[in-house]
Image 1: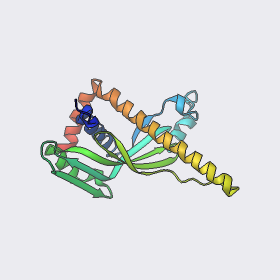
Image 2 (image 1 turned 135 degrees about the vertical axis):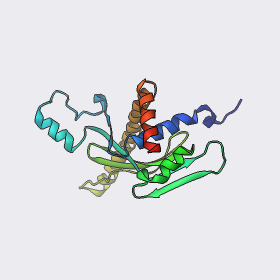
Image 3 (image 1 turned 120 degrees about the vertical axis):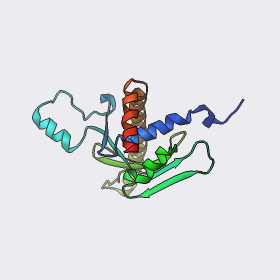
Length: 195
């Protein structure tokens, strides 16, 4: 029996998830709604024109995009990989060229905005390891002893929230991946890659 957990995770699912994150946000921000149970600020009853204008200013869910770092590798050739870094890496021609040559996304830099708070992290496959995480800044005023405790509790809350946001993204992807719409997404992805 093999005890290596990476053997239990089909590598194509992580690559498909990364491809979806990248291509669904390459031309505009990707957006996924947050379920109401974890988003108490959301109010679905308010559907007048003013609320529509406010939603356009700040999306009431998870906004995301991929940028600054993409790592693609060839699944059949050891050590054959393309690393794309820098501003606007997600729009780089090299990324599309690597995908068209059969490489799969192994790592990417993801940016999330939820309720006006910005997060950034590096996702690595196949287990969706999170690294280089940057949380929103914390600023509390008052007694420094209580500030420290409050800061720690707030940071722990942000840590928990980030894992929740990633689970929402993956669940949204999973539902798409198991639906008939996935074929349409793949066709659009091929068009975008080979254009």
